[in-house]
Length: 442
Image (cartoon, rainbow, N blue to C red; front, side, top):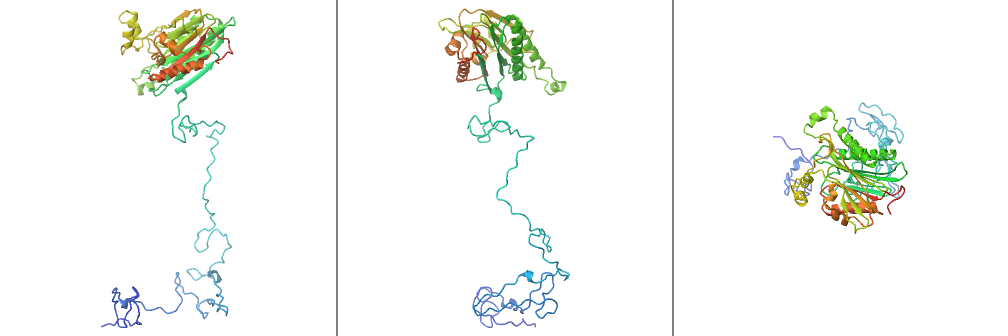
């Protein structure tokens, strides 16, 4: 039978330090196999990782190991030797090249770079690309928090609030004329538009112009239709009146020009019709007013209106237009009273509009010669739905509307919003008689 190799007796278990007897082969506490304890190694140098033995102390086989100096009587620690004090060899026992100076980019033994600069705690932000960043553009602040910057997508970088689009709320002054348009509280976009301006008649007298358009929501691109019609009519009026065209004829021609502009929107490529075969042509309504020192001319197609509000509120106000609508037809034909007709759900179904699929265009125009000063209110149904009768409109119009038209337009839009804002709201306020150019609202 083979014998276990004899080992020196252990006094304590190498596993749990339990005291042992000289003839114990297993620890009485943890059961450790004492015969598995390896014999203590001889005091020989450790074999290197590359398999070669370090130089022997007697000089055989390589350089002698430096001997540590004995500490002196003052117990000063012996000098420490570094690995660089001895030349190294590679796996083939060839001497390594001399150590490169500090800062060398690559370690010759491992090929690892040690010259990488320390990483900063913070990395600087990249400068904006001048090709896409407009550094000269003013910073637009959020309308909600008034602190965050609005990004290119129209959202606040601070609170995330979506900013109103340009046409959601528009205000404009042209001398004594003012107009305001608002998206309202229920619609997702503003489909109304307006145009205002001042010009001079051939005799040198002033003329004020206001045009208001309401996009037909059931049509395609109603916002584009109202914008095109308002711009075309306004430009036509401001061009024709200085040439001496009679204001009533100028209004008729302006409505025709607006109709052509809306019809042009229907000229789409055939491929567009293929993708949307059930879309109808863009459409809108239009109403306008021309104010001169002694004449007031109005023109319209659709159900947007013009009201006359005298400065002296003891004089009666008046509505100067007739709607192209189902309700108006019922009243005109004597089939229903005005109250009954406008209470019907079909009341606001229009019978006249601008658009390629409209019936034969019939611009309505009328001339008036008021005998006293007042203001002309040009508006869409988004306003007159909340002040339908002329007397109701007169109660809403501020008493100083002739001298503060912009303020008055804001008040009228606010009245519609307070009433529910179910539709887009647009109103223009024009003082009568016309005020010379250069006069503005107080």
